[in-house]
Amino acid sequence: MCYNPNIILPFITFKNDSSILMNNFRNTIITLIEKTVSINFITINIHKSNLSSGYDFSNLSIMKYPVFICLLVLVSYGALGQNKIPKSISVKAIPFKLGLLDDVKSLRLLSNNSLLLEAAKETDLHIPASGSYDRHNAPKLLFKPDSNFEFSAHIIPSFQEKYDGGAILVYTNAQNWAKILIQYTGSKYLLGMSVVRNKITDDAYYEISNQKHIFLKVAKQDNVFQFYSSLDGKKWNLMREFKYEQPENFKVGFYSQSPIGASCKVEYADITYAKK
Image 1: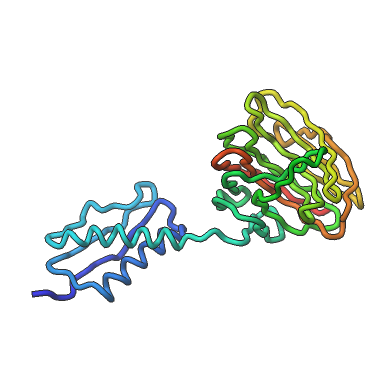
Image 2: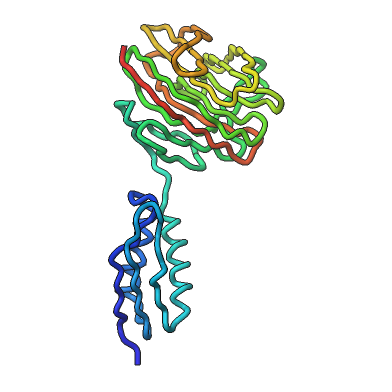
């Protein structure tokens, strides 16, 4: 005899209780079982566990129907497919939304003032002075700032492959932008600074020894921009000062790159923003 099961699912608690993905997983299981599945002799009792211990299946009793396990696996894959990358994101320190430009492998908030932006393979934002190379498919996370401002972050790339890196970016379009980038060359770490005007590049590079992460800042006063670097986020060194070609149309933000690698995760932490 088949009948609707007595299914008790009061709580499934995951380590991150606010996770959209895990809530979708839980809700999908409940809906699918209650509305579309008739199971023979199954009673499920999943008790709430605290956040520190994760989910608890210790009281799960399945007397029959091993196909139920397959159902759980299939539903979990469906829930994972619902975890789409957002087109915009907000952080506490910035009073404007950051919009995503170009494809990204992953994007997520890590805390109120930190995020992770992961570049996919063969992504770059670079036009050398010779003009022999032009790629601008690196994922960018940008916002429109006030007329005069300061914007900084602690840049922490994963550095899986040569030329991986993360940057603070001033951006109008593929022909006009400026960046201050921490990058791995295969043997050392560099700060690369580019100012691109109508696809004509002016580059500068500084070796930063074995420093795998760094604080970077951009400031604007009227038509003048300044790039800064710092080891601790307190004492800042002026690295470059320049005028920007299209100051009325620009945005600022972050970008990550992996020109020859499979991907590069970059954490942007301790984000600060101030109107000047």
